[in-house]
Image (cartoon, rainbow, N blue to C red; front, side, top):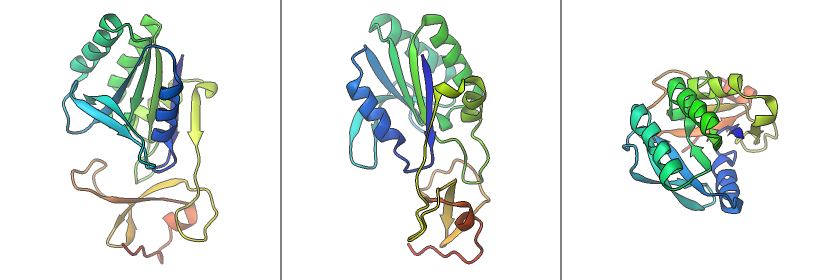
Length: 196
């Protein structure tokens, strides 16, 4: 079985992963994609409610090491279920290789991650899963717009710079950025100002 759970920032993807992992009785392991940490190093999956579980990091540019780690978990530890968080940090090729290998080994994988960038473009890994998997394998978690008194459904991960939504810049940045989940009206509003 393969699943992909997606939603905007703060929608509860990591919370869902942690709950599902804790209730899973199979031999399981957790991985989290990283922009900076090497594959195989110790990391964690943390939800906004403070829940944390340990995970092994997989680096976006270390495909061979990532596949080697997955093979090691399957053959040495008899893992039958993998939970992989932050898949938006991986490229399409990595996701494809993991998917192909999991299907060949009959391993269950639960992918979790963002669908779109702050510019509303698809992350290539997420786009690949949305096209590759069937509707009943994809789970979308919705949330409300974060602007006070707005009850609209949020549709965009908005990057906030100097109190305003920005739709320009690099997708992946080293510095800590501020993000909000916004509805269409507020994402495109020229009047919106966010106080920090």
